[in-house]
Length: 422
Image 1 (cartoon, rainbow, N blue to C red):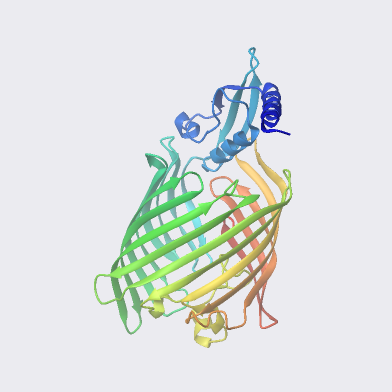
Image 2: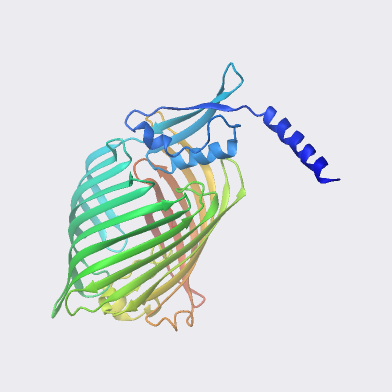
């Protein structure tokens, strides 16, 4: 077949396809009352006066949903007399949007705190978040936080927070007092690449029985992420890579240090549809660079590293029974099977609800020396959990796991957290 015939056949095929595909003459948005229309419309990329492409429409729907301010986002087409169609996106704004309330705050490393909180989501209808609060208990804290994911230009974001906190070090014999101011600017390049940079000014004191360590420093921070997930809260496909470099430049004699955090995640749908079954995998870790003071040593065996282990305590650290949990460096990998039982839906109170079950396996290592990180026996955590879609927080996570080391079961624990592990 010569080239002319190929061009003719391809042209006939294309003309036949487009002849049966209606053109899009307009795009409408309904259901919003507080949100400014341009906040939604700037996420829509389907062109006008072009053939309807349902793949592009679904991507637009997902981008609107990923804003995190709507309990639900649906789309449909409406036929017009001239044979074209109009795309209609229908959104349901999350409720409650303004929450002035007493609230309990649980940190698995510290325990329970109680306080007052004012949260304004979608502030001014511009997808901004404003949080003012204070609490007392396991952690005494007060502060203010503001964020805008698109404050100017093309996806240029801003976040600012300031506050003061006082709490006990989780496993060393120190109490910590910290006052900080943090600011960060970010920008998307397309919808898959995001770069952000900022700094934190902090004064931190580690108050011991016999000595006190005072640090005052500026902490420049750089973050890069590559993200192809379809839906951020419960991905069914895509990958996400995140690189974060957090540095600390001390104004005095406290020493300089940096922490390099890495995370790589992949998601694949094994069974599609509303009750999808998804395989999710993640590898993540922290590398400590420069001055490594003992107060910056961390441990694994948490809801964000290896599940099924109780939080480390001062008594556990002093006993030396689980030295393999502590170190300046750590690495962990996780595998999850996520099965949706009740797809997320909007209740009559205009709040979201959904339910999923998860089976998981976590494997990890911790060490003070980077070269010896993988030379020891791995910590394991395996079990099952539930994910509950919930207004305001997005998702509650409960995971019950068994902790193993050296072929023996050492621990068991119910981890509670907000959002997916990865």
